[in-house]
Length: 386
Ligand SMILES: *Cc1c(COP(=O)(O)O)cnc(C)c1O
Image: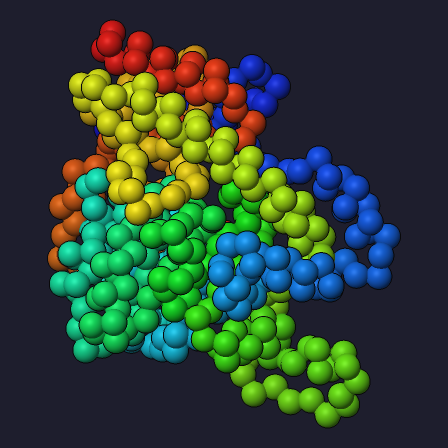
C-alpha cells in the first residue's frame, strides 16, 4: 500500500505534540558561542583541538580522534584510509542511513549488501561471513539506533579473514561492550554530530583510528592535504602529496559539543530511561514488539526506539491524530536507484519481512517520563481497538 507523504507532514512545533526528534543544546552554549564569535578563531582553531582531546578521553579510550564537518566526511576519510579503490568489494548493511553507503560510490567501490538481523535490524553477522571473498576490502557495520551489533563476533571475523572493520557509530555514541569503548573493536569508528544526534554541532563528525599514522594522514587530508600546524608554525615551503578535502570542524561547532559532552550523563540517562519505559510498557501486546539489546555485555546509549508492528500504517495514522510524531527514519538502501546496480538478483529475506513493519517512535532529551508513558499508552490503546 503506497502512502501519500502528505498524510504525515512534520507537526507544527507550536502545537502541543510529541516530536520524534529534538536537538540537545546546553544552556551554557549561548555564552560559549558569544565568546567564540568575539575571538580570533571561528573556523578550525584551538577549541577543535580541545574537543578532540576531551572526546578521545571520554568516549574512545584515548584513541586518536579527528574532528570533521560531518559523519559522512568521517566515513569518506575512513574509506580512503582503508585504501578502498575502484571495484574493491565492501560489505555493508542494507538497512542504514544512506550516509553509510554513499561515500563508497565516490570511490567507485562495489557494495555487497548484507541482510538485517531480525532481532535488532543490525547487520546479519552470518550473512557478512557468507559474503566474504578474496576481493573484500572492508566490512562496514552500523549500531542501529544505539543497539549494538555483536562486536566480538565481527572482530573475530575481521581477524580470521584479515579484513578491516569500519564501525559507523553515528547512532551509538558513548556505548560500551564488555565494559570497553566500542571504538576498541574496529579499525575505524565514525561518529556524527548532525542536528538530531546524541550531541550536536549543527553538523559535525569524528573519525577514530586504531592506527596513529593513519590518524595523522586524516588530519592532513581533512584540510586540502596541507600540514596545517607546520604551515601555521612558519614553514615556507609546502607540498601536497595526497588530494585533500575541506572536511574540518569549526570552533563554533566544537564549543557546542564541549558543552553537551559535560551533560552526557544526563543525555544517556534520559534516552535510556525513555527507551526502557517503552520496552516495559509495550510487552506482551499481540502484533507488536520493541527492538532492544538483550545482552548483559552491552551498555548502550539509545538513540532510536523502533517498534515492529503488523499494523504499522494504521498505528502511525492514529498516533498522528493524537499529535505523536513517528517515522520510518531509514529505508532499505537496495531500493534506492543509486545502489540498484549492486542488487540484481540479490535477496534480503529478513529485510523483506520487516520492510513494512518497523516504525520509529519519539526518544529525545526534551521528553519526560510522562511523555513516554503517554506515547506507550496510546500505542496500547490504538492496537487494542484495532
Ligand atoms: C547520521 C548518520 C550518518 C551521517 O552523519 P552526517 O553527520 O549527517 O553526515 C551516518 N550514518 C548513520 C548511521 C547516521 O545515523
